[in-house]
Image (cartoon, rainbow, N blue to C red; front, side, top):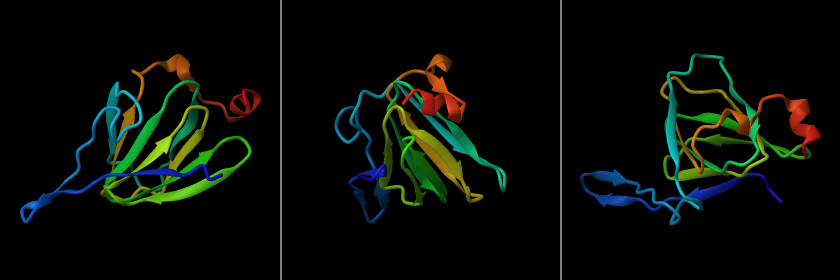
Length: 131
């Protein structure tokens, strides 16, 4: 079973351009509590390196590209995000890393919970112990 799970968003629009609508419990499989975006990531900088105990997320690269690594402690898979109509669904207890950000990358992340530092597992060995 693959760790990489995509949500395909319908493209709306007309001759003026395209639009993607994101809705609670419709095309996002949870109630949205938090939205943030990452941009301006410097060359050769990686991010992430953590898991969440009780958090679901959908990551959408709305501009540019970046590489995600998803790890469940047994399997480790990599995927390139480069399409604003595809969201990467990340369930709880999955280690995530982000690499190879393009200069123009804007990574939008939709989360099922408000920020809670206690929910983070920031050490890979601790993550493996908790599986």
